[in-house]
Length: 359
Ligand code: IPM
Ligand code: MG
Image (tube, rainbow, N blue to C red; front, side, top):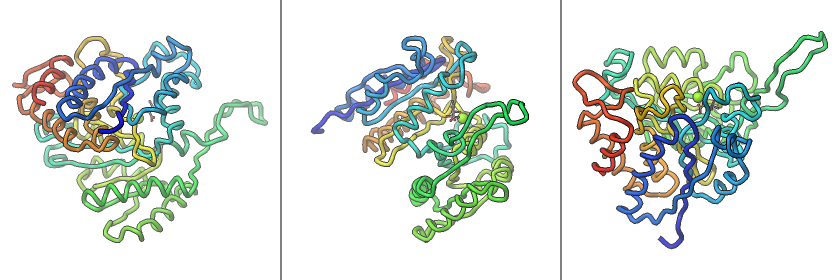
């Protein structure tokens, strides 16, 4: 490789540092084994950055993030920082890096690993073979719309408000990512909106219809978000790719992840227009189990695989990591979150070690 590529590692808070440390070992091994020539850097985000610098996304972290070719993140947040104003909470660090790097395209796969079919709270026949991709818009919508705030209204009453807005170009680029993703899968896109009530999603629906003309092979359908929430538990396998806005995607992706019974297994990617990306597990910082060495590092390890595939063009290394994860599941190794009768319960570090050994 002519020029070294850089991966920035942001462990964050809670279980973040524990799971990222295992994922980093896997990344280092893949780097050697496949001669990827990657350089690894580290920086602070979230509560850890608040403690050190008073802000959740320091300029120094942003400078490194801008330089990096890809970013691996653990998780942010925890009760320690819950009393802080929303403007400087750890979560704001995550929103800031997404927004400042324009990581608009959030891919959240919900896959049921055959080895974990019993872990779902749904009947096995409903979820067996489940493989859905949620494409969530990540830098717009009600999360970022202005104006926003809490003020005293004309009646002297406190009033909170947020703005739900999408420009056509924002809808187009996330739509395109969804259609392109569907082309590599089962060629079905379900666009989720609330077009019976919210004008912004009437536009969303229109833009998706226009875009669909460019992808004649892809079947586009539309669903209201309340119905989509219901259909996801009723018959989840009807979906291939779901594309939706920031807030609906936040909610539906948690629901979809839980269908698999193993949120500790699910990676995610947040991409900019050049496929530079931030990769993180779908789960949060789980402060209740932080420091106990029982968290599942597999979602973060699988995020490393996504990172290699989408941002560094190292598909072979990515596939090898995914294969190694499948192998440790075949060896019946389970962290507490996916443990069941007859399996071998292992720690975060032992799970990491097993993946390294398999790789
Ligand atoms: C997620 C999280 C974040 C979000 C929070 C931590 C800001 O829930 O990544 O889904 O709402 O986007
Ligand atoms: Mg969420």
